[in-house]
Length: 231
Length: 183
Image 1 (cartoon, rainbow over the protein chains, first blue to last red):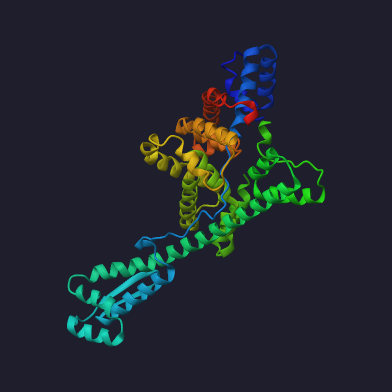
Image 2 (cartoon, one colour; image 1 turned 90 degrees about the vertical axis):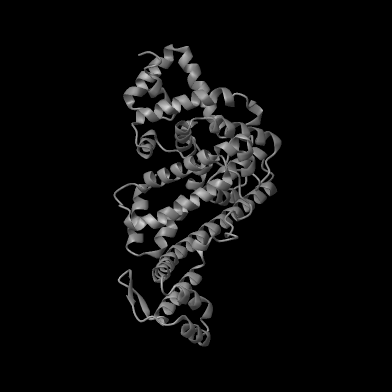
């Protein structure tokens, strides 16, 4: 087979992913073709150089809470409270909205004059919200309903988003802390710069385990599990 | 990639175990950030993309069919988000030479020679076509097999190998600039 026909198998060979048949063919070809041997060496060198690009280490938690949360992403409690308030307000003006079997069910009742509502609302301390609803009473019932519906849905989304953010932030704080700790300890051991980089690039769990082993035996050479397949 | 663990976690999540999703996130967090970083060249953006992908996951998981490999699905989500994001940012990036890789390392300053290597590799990978870049990211930086990549990209394994060979040929002259003592 010529060089071009073997190109695909050669790429698999780089990563030790050939079938037995391919391996025999590639090795037989490499034994006679200087150009392919050189190319293979070049490729291995290229792969090695790709390792020089590491993901920057985060020192500060990278997940900051949104400074100005868009209105769609209110805090969970605010979402729930808004939904409850809108439901209450709708009930006040004779329109009953209920959350039943996963759907909003609405019943239109009597209409009340906005002035009367405003009085009642002032007494109940619900004024701002219900005034809005009252203004929309004639032509805006559906809009209010949509808002109520939205609030109920968003409550669930907010809850998920909130939990996810907390989790991710915790993870990143832990990572940053562990990395700092490792680097400090490695510095104290006086290990060389290259080794320190390897540690920074190594997956955390491995690094932590490695550190445990290293602490037991300071003369031991740390190993990394990165990209072993291409070495 | 051990799909069995993901499958079990998803089944437990669907059965109402509140801890299962958190374990899934913990398992995938670093890999997703890394993939997005290799595809966009921007650490900050990579974290955003990871967050979006996990959010999308949290919404889709109830309906997720555990017979399908989660890894294939989540890698696809991150790859698509990264490519969309990068496409949108391309015009801006053209005016900010290597800003991406620089911005990514605000957190921890690198020494001069390492910074040079870092930037050279980042720029070389960024110069690849989107299709070749994904292959390099999944193969070299995520360590997937060619068959696994083929499933993520929904194409034959031979196409993946061809792309990898093409990517290596394109990377070689650019990375040759790195002096051996800098690595």
